[in-house]
Image (cartoon, rainbow, N blue to C red):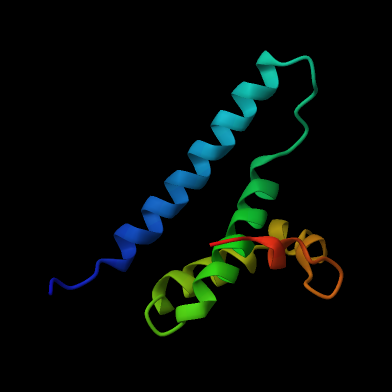
Length: 97
């Protein structure tokens, strides 16, 4: 079995989040509604969602989980952590995967 390239996997997930943000921003400019979500908010929510899902197999996803933990320690994203605090919100408990 070939060795995993966790750097590539992290970059692919990061690029997917960037793509999601661009699609949301473009959809916001095409609609009659205002788009007020910035990139940091999308990154924070995405990182928390990926962490929640990948925590089920921590040993296999150790590198990716460390990558998202590092992102979430960013000062700009640190202010958003209360939004996804599991004690205050059950939104991630409703994710079906």
